[in-house]
Length: 268
Length: 265
Image (cartoon, rainbow over all chains, first blue to last red; front, side, top):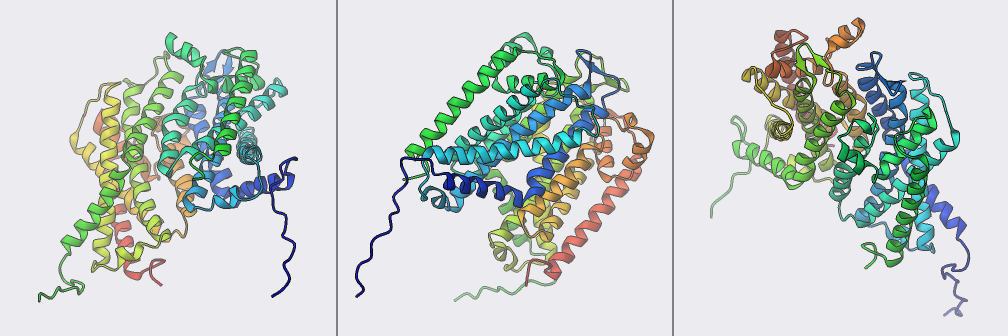
């Protein structure tokens, strides 16, 4: 028998950030959706343009909202809706798929800390949301005159929304036990919220009570903030919106961290 | 000992087989009732809400019909079409991906029986979704029916046409991705742009002409006529067109099953 060899040191690196692992996870996730870019990038662009056609062109006809041509009011809303839906879809489906295929071990085994896992997943989801948004923005600009009123607000709200939905999708993916659960959250929570938070109409169209409720809806601040960035118009308060976005992000991020840390529904 | 005859039955219709396939398919979508029935209702109601809120207080009407009543048939039919297509395409595609399709192809069933089982079960889903969506909408607006014949004919025809199209898509597709592509790049645009949400009379002249070559336009137009008594296109052309398209694609499905195209190697 050969003499025993010095065992390889494979302990997780505890003291410093595992940059390579983090980057690998991020790259793996981004490659995953770029492989099916027809579904992940082109399809949302087509859907958004369809919405624009139906709402803007077929009903356009000189309609204005607060003195703004309707299509110009609509464009930022559609952009935000795209970010919300795609960032959410990415992390939630990616995780549930890994759980169903039982290859999630390959993600949990490497020496990645819960924080690194959270960052890798959320960032890749957010990247998808933003990539789709850029694609949609470029194609919208052929049809609608898009001007940027405040670039800071555009970037802040776009990134804030992408990160928020990335982590929300991640929580859903961790919690869900089957695909059905993910679709339920998408159909009954994300879709209604993204439709009814001011994407297509100013919330002043709502009855009084609904308007009050909207001010507790983070999606409303996201859409309103992005619209402010493009048009300079707002239904809410931009400062409150910024605080809400940051606070919600911190809470969701912490929840994801705790979920990975405890291994909730992932490790037994 | 009794000997069970397992030879394919040629010459007469395998009723038990067709019924079993139909039942299995219907049970499949009832198992996930929240996704198959409630999700389309919520989506349709959301569309109803956003259109109303976005264009509220402008006294918008089409002809002398209030906009909300104009929307109801379009949204209902859209939900039915999406559901029928999704059911036929995803069911067969899923069987191909998880390789359980052999269990469907092995039993002594002829191509015609297979087609009937799949198409009729998807049609059933389309009709049930239409019914639930209508019930959901009846809470918010009054629904009147102008002609039962047109409502029923177009409901069945639209669901059936989308089912055969879904079935062909699934036979052809090699992965879920392909089905999703057809859904996103063909079915969704055609449904959105066929007058679901607006009267084609609002479109520029050129687009109106193009719309009249789109079979989806006739489905929505005829179905809406059944509710409102108003139509943009020719109803007779619609009936002939839909019947012949269904017959054509149905035959294509039978041929595809018979040849084993992309199903048997």
